[in-house]
View 1 (cartoon, rainbow, N blue to C red):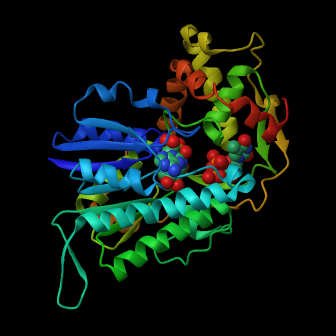
View 2: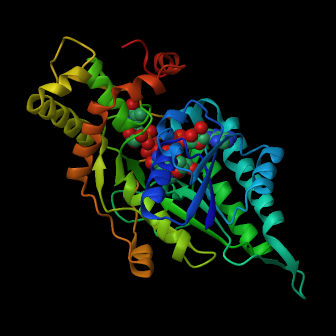
Length: 370
Ligand code: NAD
Ligand code: TYD
């Protein structure tokens, strides 16, 4: 039995990863460590917790005592670090929290893993680690900065982060790579493009747009809507991480992306037309509507003030993970977006649950009352 410590496993990608691993593997015990910030929700994995292969611990990755106690209690051999503050807009408002969680949290996890995994020193003073241990840092393509109209991010593209979020993720990447050199720690980094799918917190573009459509609210598009993101269905990302954990070459970085660039405005228009079509096709879905006004059309779009330092375009070249590990995305965007919207139409309870805290306050601060 392997023992994975999955941090941030109650968030969007982390929870999808937990479900993916439980379904695909029988020989992996998962310990989720998650502080249940506004973005984490225990309900997301409550069904999965009925499985004895999954355990949940509430705690902060920055806390030395917490992380040590997890390593003391369980024979952790693999760390998959999803835990992070993940929203660019919030990083613009409160950079410090991003630096604390994303940088110091990663360093604390690395130091604890190093302490528990090192069994001896070699003749030159480098630590020698237990067999089969690995630290996987889940990073983002945003560390590379912003592209112009052409070109792709490869693993050798210099890091050039431009938001407090991406700067904190880039710093964490550098720390991970530094530990690989200095202490010969067995690590990998994955850098993925924008994910979408079930359990995505409705502060990010796609779930926010779906939520607002169902409430008859305006759909805020930053700037002129021509910024480009490269979208990947979350399960394809989970599959990539699984491959890198099990077969990735130690010390290597792997970019993950499915060649699916789209302008924000096109995503919003497609989401509008897909929600409208699904509501027409299945009257049951009308239960998800929170308004009597059912004018679901492009008039809902409102162009709002642009994000500060808004990165223009992201686009991943996934050639390395494809050729080395045979990874290819399975879900075409046209199918993934329908699956995702169906999921939201069928899971409004989840949306209500995760937005029952400070969400309204956050929303008013960001977008005003509309
Ligand atoms: P998310 O915000 O949905 O989830 C983050 C989770 O981490 C939450 O469950 C939260 O409670 C937990 N958490 C936050 N601070 C913590 C702390 N100090 N200690 C313990 N737990 C804490 O984020 P996500 O979208 O699932 O992203 C997961 C990871 O993937 C992040 O590292 C992010 O940088 C990276 N990533 C995300 C995307 C994307 O499109 N969402 C793309 C590439 C990489
Ligand atoms: P987001 O989902 O926050 O992801 P990221 O900034 O990490 O790429 O935003 C995706 C794109 O959508 C980004 O270009 C900003 C834009 N956006 C809007 O136009 N309106 C919104 O309300 C949000 C949340 C994002």
